[in-house]
Image 1 (spheres, rainbow, N blue to C red):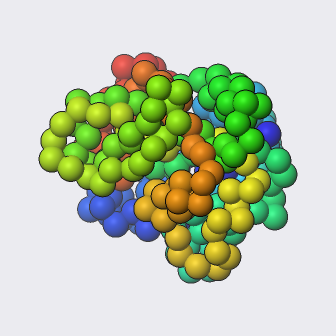
Image 2 (tube, rainbow, N blue to C red):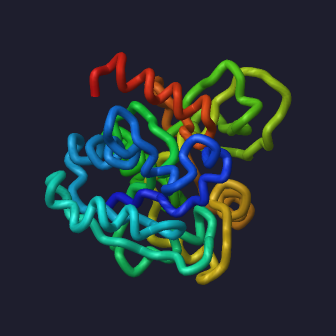
Length: 238
């Protein structure tokens, strides 16, 4: 199975501390953040990676090359203009076959992606309308993320926008998606997977499932999130 990493964001919220490179290349203990994601995937047996790049893509390609240094094979899907999270996935459609894993390039989720994949396959076997499984986690303050509502079988019912501070289960930025998911994304257009494609999928009668994880989660797109990940790396000695 191929794993896509969405690494094409502009990183405007982080520019005050990382002004000269893509946010995915922000250094943490001497290594770019993206290298931690590549290492995490490799350690779990994912060796075929696609980096969806755009803003300052040359920094990423020059550093990672073909991926052989990390024991993986890396291909690149380059955006000429910003396409958003879903648009970036659609732009890489020619590089994937069958179901595929997706990671947001600016978040880190401590989870076993193989178990996520196994859960997706079990649900898919029982539900042919399933097009994706989302890793979710509970946070005490979901105001910055928005929350998911799902039924007793973990089938997602709706996505709630960012609300006032309260606990809830949020999107962890890691997905397993079926090839038919790509048909819901118009090519060459900026589209958000969170705001556009996931809700459209539910409207059209397809299903998404939530898979609960409990590990560390951080969005490094803000200075505080960046510092949190730095502390995490120091504590874990990664």
